[in-house]
Length: 191
Image 1 (cartoon, rainbow, N blue to C red):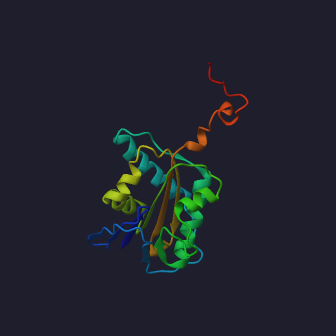
Image 2 (cartoon, one colour):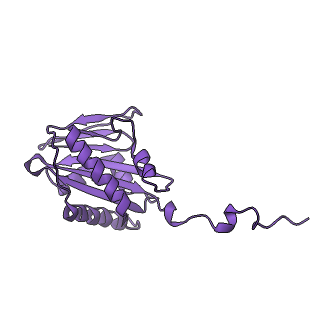
Image 3 (cartoon, rainbow, N blue to C red):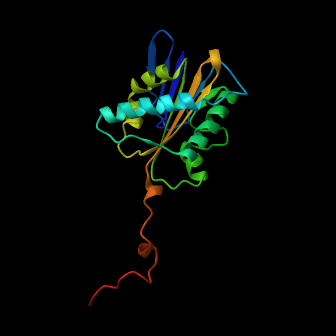
């Protein structure tokens, strides 16, 4: 069984036998109750690399630039994935009201856009296939403005995995030129 959430808050539910997508075009927080609450769930960097490879294969096949892994985004994704397993829910909005953007900006990353995909599945391949089969998730994966990604895979063993994909642009890589910030160095218009 698996469940999916994209930052735009649609929800798609997939049983292990058949997919039953539910498009909830709402701005209200959506939460999907997981069948398990697990406190001590290990992160699996090897599986996160597999997810990164699947994402980039998909993007390159669509003519897009591959995503670059970002260490801080990865830490945010990992911490949030652990929190989701511990709470036993899949939701973009934490109980304290923080959104994916709040978590990214709160970690000191300067960005213009943020996207997040959440998946609960038996394994990462099933999670990726289900995300690609869902229009809102696919659009996050294939959004050309995203350049950086933080991926976490939390392994609940026989209880499944949670995959967290946090996407951002690369505005942190391109700060404004120094002269732009200082009126003293800006040229004055000619008369």
